[in-house]
Picture 1 (tube, rainbow, N blue to C red):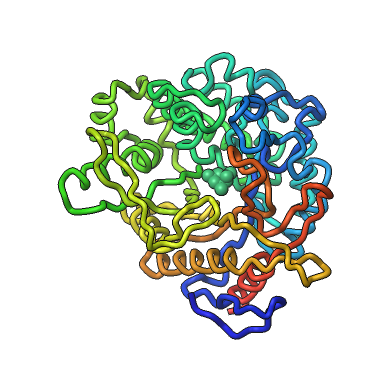
Picture 2 (tube, protein in one colour):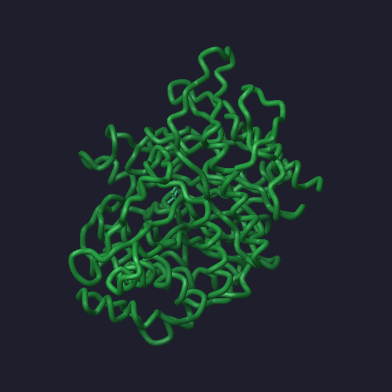
Length: 466
Ligand code: FCB
């Protein structure tokens, strides 16, 4: 990290505003997701999602937290859009709540639910902010989970119907669509590990879910393109694992291959190449699981895309565990950690982006999430309660620098969305982990931009005026 002796509210040194390698037309944005910020879980016809149910499961979420109120964004949306505008950012990535738009996940759209997103889009456009809509950020309608959830093929078709309803209403103004956010988390954390909704622990079901998420994506891309009048930009967001072997021992190299297959290529290959990797299919067979591929599925899944969204937070060093197909992550005590605690490794982002652009050439990349949780302390001396989150600011600066390096190495990365606009419901961690560049006081719902937000504003401005 390079330090500029620039004037700062805190008097602390801040990272440079001049990130090398980023062009003047680089897209600067922030991201959120519906369940993490909206609250209003019973409002205007919304039905429960799997996260409402999971949040009521004893022990599932830290402190028994839930998204019933969250950041109350449903009622404070215009003010939150103003925050983004005040930061001078170009784009806002949000997600639509499926059970708000289509209660129960079947049948006609819920006009009132869609009205909310309609107003959001209009607010954004009125303030010159480009909306980037994610259709699925993990909040499956509970009724569809009751019918079997993502391990069932029918859920893919239900998702495509919902995508058409949403794009049909908003597609005259929303030109950037992301079908799924991190299908790895939906499938593996939700159905295998069980630490995310719906909390199942069934590896075979999780692998079925992987394929049906992909199928839902492909079907949805077609339906979005069929209803959006202007040429839509359609993509998907993955969080591909960035893994390094712990040693050059054959067992560690094979564990790394497996981790890369299950954490990255099982998602990237079908969507961008129209095939599942053969070594992954063989690994799955050894583990007693299989991808339920039917004739024509891979053609459907491999729809041409306009961009690929990448979420990056950390990398992993991997060694052989107790048996094939069971790699273990080796902690790196030399690396600093965030409050998660996730190891901080910006070089992993450069490596990931250069690798993706080499192995899957020709598709523009956007960082659709990157950011860090830290235990922010409200600056005691500051009457305005400002938060000098130099650690988060440095994290963002270092990762933007990593993006610049990847660009210089030839990766076509066109934008960066900080996770997150504001502190919010961090899934199984509840409200304990704060990723926001804007602080939320959950008692009062007061929003206070942190130092990182002001730095992002200024770094975006500096890049634009190059
Ligand atoms: C990602 C999720 C996002 C947020 C960040 C910290 O995996 O997409 O909702 O929880 O992690």
